[in-house]
Image 1 (cartoon, rainbow, N blue to C red):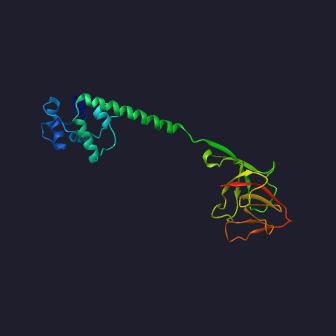
Image 2 (image 1 turned 90 degrees about the vertical axis):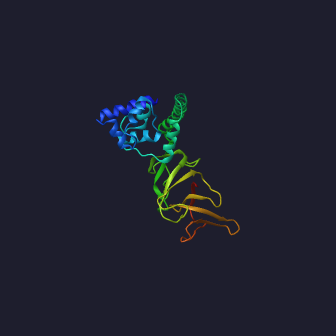
Image 3 (image 1 turned 30 degrees about the vertical axis):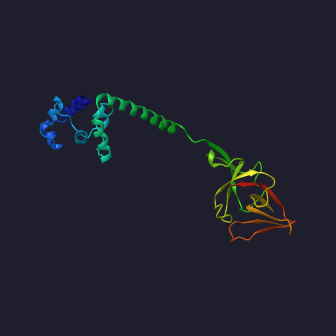
Length: 247
């Protein structure tokens, strides 16, 4: 392993037309250190090997293992990385090979997980969204001739039981529902007292909270924004429940 690294150092020396003595001076080691690494009379420290890799601006994968792209962007190392490489340098060849196997196994698992994450797309669902907004002052818009679009959403963004979406106009249901928000609706002919629903009242479409006072026999469509007064529903009004808003 070390012999191969030293061989790559001499390849870099030849390619860059630099002498071993010049390199030794550049990385601040004894002038004969590089040649002593080659003869095996002295072993380089991990820190000095890192200095060589940084000086020639080569990738660590190529420098230490002879694999991958040789040249890379400028290298910088923190103290933790230097300590790890120094510890690596103290291992014998068998221990280094065992470490390589463990690292390779770990990287195989990691790369497989990353590849799966890239290939897996979040499940999406196309949902019918009516183009006319509730509270806009029109009625009878949820029928076969009502304009709508099919829009794609992440499946987990749509509540279970949703039949369609309706765009809300105005701020009467803030802070829960904002202007231009699409609310998800479960189509049904009635909602419970206190539920937020989509209603047709005398030809106008509204997103409101249904409040029923059985004692006073009073029905109101209530805004969550206190700036808006409740809409009283009398026995002479036409009120139709279109669906329940799913929050």
